Length: 396
Image 1 (cartoon, rainbow, N blue to C red):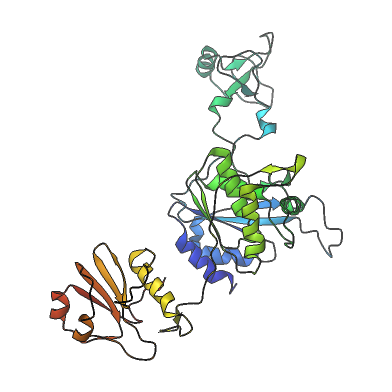
Image 2 (image 1 turned 45 degrees about the vertical axis):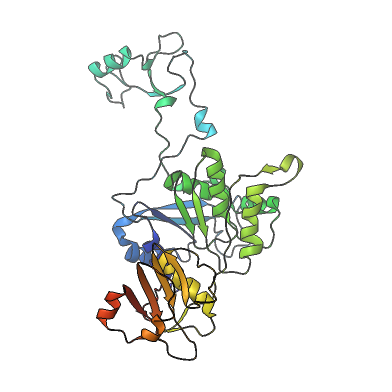
């Protein structure tokens, strides 16, 4: 719980207003996670819990019960705004739509229709009035069988009118795969050394429910990279522009997580098992040391790295090359010149002597230093904003 709580607080802050979070958990920690999420996300924003049937066969070596189910808790940032998408018909469901009467409106499915043109069974009740039935007959919505003489009609629902399959809280491995299938998927990609992958079809199901073509999907426990795999598959399927952000703290982030994404993008396998690449791209970054050590700057961080950080927090731009004749100058952005005046072994002061070293002309200046002896009048006169090191360095 100590591990989950601060991370969930941060993830809640990062969620879009119309976003949702899907959290996979086993039965041993489900109760604790539910209480934490109710506190952080708000109990009113709890959507539902999905049970994922994750095993194709039971664990015969289980001491008490074979643990075949994993849970996926779903919370919305704001349940009054968030709406899940319905699922498309699968192949089995699609087969139920046919067109035996060659209706020009295309394939249709049918349901039992009890109207007052015919007598219902003794345990049934009238479902449609005479007027409603006459309307449906005029629209050719009722099917009375091949010969047109069936005692009970069927009500026609056309495939073109289908609004999607309602989401259910039990996901079978036939639809989203299972843990063994996920391991085989990694094996086919040529990745080894990861024992608990999730199947890409499982995450694709989440994307179908919660994302559109332009969504940003964050996985803060990326593992083998299943989420990226699923996003790339989804984009290829519907020409989407979804983006993924993966975070992984373990040392396999490069050799397993990133490597899987590379192979999915470029394609993998040989012969009949060859899988074409999805296309796309990604960038890989390693988190450096923290800029701050408590209230102070981290002495182990090189000054050039701190300059890059400060300039980026100010401008959201990469810092230009350093100028030999003006070493404190960081760069110019939107006609504002930025300076970082710092000495690791001493105290720096923004004063008139320092101003004599400024050579860049600009509409305004932002100058970082330890101290400032210029008056407010002088700062205003030369359009200078003084920022104290380290107090005024932004903390992301």
